[in-house]
Amino acid sequence: MNLDSRGDRTNFIGAWRSAAVAHCRRARATITAAGGRPGDLEAAIAECREVLAGRLGNTERAWDHLAVVKAMLNGRLARVLVPPATRHVAQNPRRPARTPRFLRARA
Image (cartoon, rainbow, N blue to C red):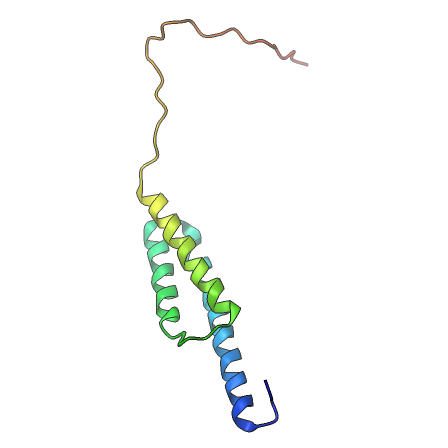
């Protein structure tokens, strides 16, 4: 990019500022989602969505990172909303429990 002309320099500075905004918002969204509750994650995703709406075709890496953070937060939210599976343990097992193969000696 030729920075000698005034227009190119202004465009370069504007692109840099928008990338810096994307980087700051990425950090802020990560901090907002740190609680891990569904409300926190939804707020962080909304913030990412709001900032990405103003991307306007910018190809800076900070915007790509912000999109990755948004996708990561969507995945975390999906995992939080699904209840964890519990392991089945039989109440009356057919076989007795195995004896431990190695006993630890207490000092």
